[in-house]
Image (cartoon, rainbow, N blue to C red):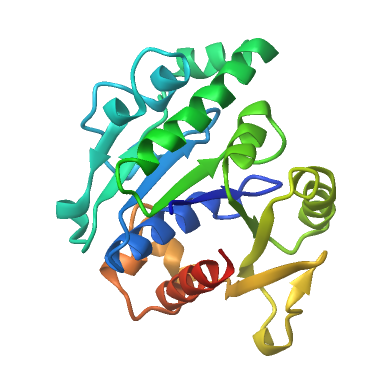
Amino acid sequence: MTLTLAIHSSKGGTGKTSIAMNLAVAFASAGKNTCLIDLDLRGPSLHSMFEPKSHFWINDFLSGKCSIKDTLTDFKKEMNTKAHLYMSFSNPDIREIRDLVSKDRDWQASALKALMNGKRELSEKDLDVIIFDTSPGVEYESINAVAASDMVIIVHNDTNACNSCTEQLINGVYSLLDKKCGIIENMSHNNCLDIIDKKRYGVPVLSTIPCMCEIATRGKDEILVHTDPEHLFSKSIVSIKEKIEAMK
């Protein structure tokens, strides 16, 4: 059975996309056929780290212009993974992003239906894991991704603003949609990692990843689980993957 994850955050700048990319590579490296879909339609970034080879974007699929399979590029060879590593990219053109902002609720409802159908189509492709990299916050497309997922992984920074908004998301969105959740405390400045709470807001903390300034100097497009599997960040990602598999 295919597991669908929504990687979400209450605010931008939490490292959500980096977590999503590294998790996708970790699953594929472990032999799980994986698909990473960039649903951060208002601020897409996946295309800047991987070169799309398809002529279609995920936006085209959501608008009914193609099938979801038409949007996929397989990076198994480039990333040297055991299993397939498909990616679907969001159109970064500013005109497309501006057009998205003007979409009405009927379009968003149609996009959710398309996303559910696409998920079903990908499941029939023998995929083990589908990962949605969502927009932060509570935009329609973010909630669509959460609604279409089996489990939500919240990438969280320990700031007052993030704390308040994360609690509201858990109580006001995820619980109402009856979604399993896990929290990743990313870029933590707490040096005593052993005493971090095992739960926050009633949700299990899958990992507390310390702030590592040297990661920023290595280039934002480096996938550490691929280039440096012994790095603390990479080991944290693999541990998160294993905990997610145990939760499903």
